[in-house]
Image 1: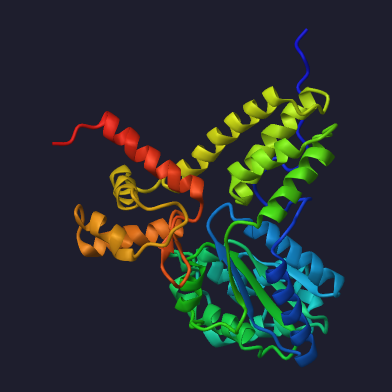
Image 2: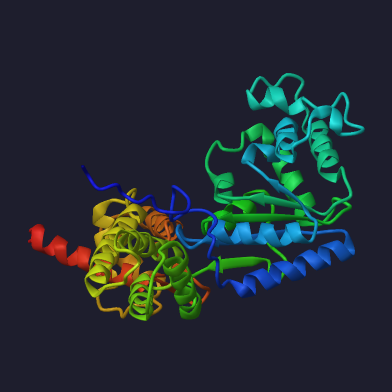
Amino acid sequence: MSKKKNVLPGRSAFDRGPTPHFRGRTSVLNKFRILRKRAMRGKEGTTFIIHGAPGAGKTALLDQCQKRAEKDDWNIVKLYTTALWNPDDLLHCLGKSHTQITGLKGEIGVGAEVLGHANIGFDVQRTTRTMMKILQDGKKPLLLILDEAQALGYKDVVPSEMKGVVTSVLNKIHNGDLGKAAILLAGGLKTTLDAFEIFGISRTAMKCVEELGPLSEKSTRAIIYAWLTNEGGAKGDVTKWVGSIAKESNGWPQHIAAYVESAIFHLMENGGHPTSTGLNEVLHEGRIERAEYYEQRVRRIEGGDVICLAKAILDLPAGKIFKKETVMSELESKHSTEKAEGIFCTFIEKGVIAEDGRGYSIPISSMHDWLKSELKLYKERIWEP
């Protein structure tokens, strides 16, 4: 009879979404708390944007922002993109039927035909007024949450005839013109800022844009310890396990989840005993998961362009800042300047390159090392004159 496998705790998508052991991001949460207080005091609001590379923990942070707003008795509304121009979809996100909204009879349903692109009797101003009335209804402060917000900038996501409606809705919220406390909390990739700029929002309020990088070592270790002891049922001293996993995860939430998932499985299979042999297996499996994450980041980028990036940073120590020209010169050796510029932007969008206002860098030291290893493997396998 085969041995029954333990079922790992937590979500099926272990490295995505909310987490039961959230730590860190204190500065962001404090800024969001201050913004909520100001919005409630002045009965206004604005847009709060959290962006970063895939795996940086954006969705988990949005979840924490939501929980804190709920404690302050805010009305929480999770949006999908169509709810920014379709009244019926906005009502659905609010959990309301047409008849529950006062003063809107005869106007609701304007967007329903538009969603199917029939455009029957479509009127931009009328739809915009309807959207505003829906958002203004009710006295409770309103927190609108839009995850994966970079999608607003993707081609054909917002129909051309609806861009005027979305522009009006976003700007009304952004400028605090709903006559009530209302905040749009948006999370997404680096290109989220570009997406909002398409709709006329090129400047956000002070301290209302946050780019997520790695967690601090203290937060990283606390998260790992919580997972190993609570879900893994670790018995005895786990200091070595925590330190080793923290070092290899580089404070990157996705990496922490990858190593922790393997660690929990090994602990559950071995009665919670953290052995040296088990740790070696966990680190090995974590490295495989980590490499797969990097491969996913560059999956839609031509292999030769990844090698160009690797060549550009070959002599650069991990974590150091470089100039854009360092990478562009390698890309321009293969492509036109225009195409090289597009590839460079894709590297940023995919979280392979990070920008911090001073320059550019590879945001995760282990990804920096992985790129160099890819270059070494390329040189071993590919002949070049």
